[in-house]
Length: 471
Image (cartoon, rainbow, N blue to C red; front, side):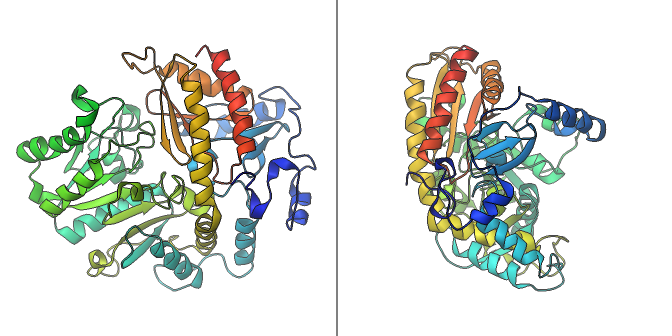
């Protein structure tokens, strides 16, 4: 699907179609204008200084990029410098920056009404988005939706429903997992120690197991034993020592681990996990906040595993940048979830739901396929670099969710986090926006509208960056 862009035209080619008036208002005539200042430029430096005087430092920043506008995969900073965005706001702007269909949907809704609390009243945008979302669920069947405002809120809803529906309290998550930063979701998160430091005690009844990482296997088992070793730790260690299975409400897992390093699980693990859950009456929660909404070439990443979860959590790419989250559960789980048992003020917000509905339609109609095809192309390009750079230890992923893992030595596979950070910073200086994850991985999660031309341009910058960083 080379050359795919907004509604059939590609932003990098200089071509225009029915959105000419929209483009002329917001974007320069040449979308590939050259860098006009040093990086960061004076305007960016000024805004960074102002930010530091008013913003709480807990958010953190990885490099001084200050966006002014964006279109598709391209973004411009406040000094007029152009970049390729290969992180999509942490896998959020799934349909690209300011896609005309998303913008139009938001504008149309804003002229009607912006908000009416979905916990107390009804509105059509909320119903339409819920109908569309439920129709995409793995395995079909009857599903029910609860709208939230973020991924962490979606996970909180899943925790509460799992405990409410089963009458059990125990929860199992995985080392390396990221499920959010509010107290319940943070109790499941096990990505980096500073995310938890200073916040104990956390939610009781939570245990962690080993994610089936085939590149760095738990217990250093052979690669063909990774799935079984990870399953055995749950059933033969946790269940037989500290966590009785009859007290476990749910196991929550990312179908591809995100902040933990873009890790694709060992084959067979998810089928074994589904069987284990069924054996003990435990619910399986798929956290699709980062991996869902077409990013892996399928609507939901767990579809690659051939299993159906009981609950799915979503956010990030669901609203194309508008804050929205969703917890979607099998209908029988919510039948006794009585009014008032859970709720929020902004869930089902009309603007967010219009954006989510349009996003799901776009992804289903064209972008999911482009994610599969462009992802395969990008993965091939990155694996060619893997063969040529000694500090690239592993290239892995599905669709447009790809990780490049840097190592000090390919034999020992010791993570090389300093190099990953250096590559991220050098790429920024050259006009390519990347982010790290895990201990030593660069993640590639560009907007799903990306074309082969943009991939080629990005890979040329990335190779130049690798040489400059000493990879």
